[in-house]
Length: 162
Image (cartoon, rainbow, N blue to C red; front, top):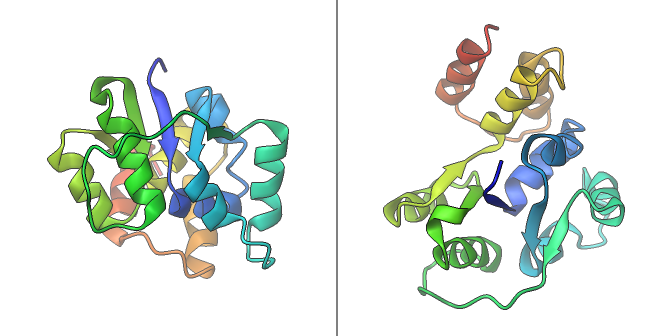
């Protein structure tokens, strides 16, 4: 994929829970995370998925965005979500955002940014043969209280033949 991929906290946490951080570079190539998002997911509090996230940064699967971020708009989202959107706004046709929060996806779509979520990444992993079952990944997320709507899950499962 030729677009630069910027990922927010929620998908990172969800993918860490299903051992899916390894899929990101296999699906997208280099994946960037704003420093604000890194600070959000690696607070040092031993939260679920934190070790997998730390390993993904240490191994280079996730790359911290080190370029300056121009505040293209001031929006009422958290710092990580705002940084992700502001990075993409610098050149909308060149970025893909991975975000789950409904409000930030709505803002991104309002600015015609390309956005996918955790569910879509799971679907892509299944399509590429990286996992045997998307349904099993969704079940792990459900047991962990990570929420994705049943409509979205059913759409992804149908698209991958499960």
